[in-house]
Amino acid sequence: MGVENRIYIIEKHKSPREYGGKQFTYWGDVIAMYNVGKCPELHKAFRKETDAYIYSDDADTPIIKDKYDKPLCEADISKVIKTVEKITKREDYWRLKPLLSLLKSVEKQAEEPVSIGVLNYCS
Image 1: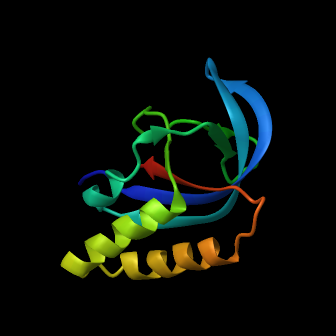
Image 2: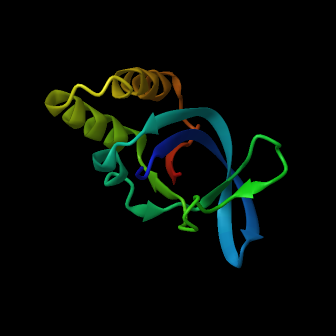
């Protein structure tokens, strides 16, 4: 057993709201959710608590914390790409290669003024 990571790639839309006693600035429209599994090094890339909330698959329940009741953390897509590239040079963890392709594709296709965020959910 151990902490597993789910990566949410979101498009951020200004939509101030309060959940769980915290004020959020953005609503995150989920573009993709990727189950990474166990990858402790990837978790280290996510240092900043997010200012976006997302909804679960039922489109009604806000997700503002992970399974361990910790706030969701966010990282810039380019930082996540660099972190994944660094990890894949040292380790051959097969789940990271498709994630890297997905992240690069989203980064390349997203045009201004689209605001992309990458969230880490620990389960």
